[in-house]
Length: 206
Figure (cartoon, rainbow, N blue to C red):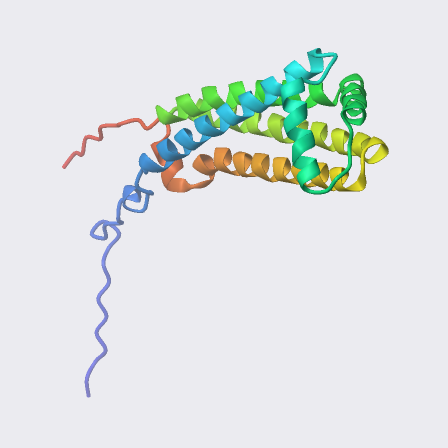
């Protein structure tokens, strides 16, 4: 007959693995890649916002741009005259749609660009600025585009309204992607560990 033998280790002899063993490894490449994409996106936001700002200040729609727009519609067999589009331009300018989208995209673009540059240096403040700018661009960009769509439905052919509505959704989707990208560095544990990383020295006593 054999006796059951059990071996127990005292708490002094048992060594728990260090918590640093389970800590995520900092990923510096991910945030820097996102930072570059955010800066590129901010440039597009600034260009679009600046164009809307100029249109909000112009009494007449730029003739060169108007010719291209009308030619494009004519190629799609959409009948619209220069006078009709000019009236549409006047209405959305007075309605404030140009200003809403223009100022939102310019302000948001500046924040996203600044945040992207800081994020490239692994500064967590860059995430906050980029996220704020992207949200401003999302709300103002989609809101201004939707205001244009509503005016278009009252003044322009249905096909033009459909195009403007699709552009509104595209603007919203693009800005939503920008918001998601800006938030990714703080949602991913490895990327978050690389932001404002600090080196600490631990002295072990025997």
